[in-house]
Amino acid sequence: EWSKLSDYEKTDMTIASQELACGGGLCEIQ
Image (tube, rainbow, N blue to C red; front, side, top):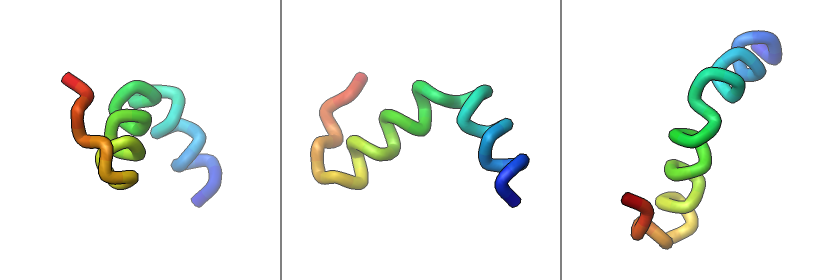
């Protein structure tokens, strides 16, 4: 599971960051 997560973070680091911000209640990233 960890290897999969690492690969995901490497490929979609920006997307993950946006999702994190959205989850935090700051969905203002365009």
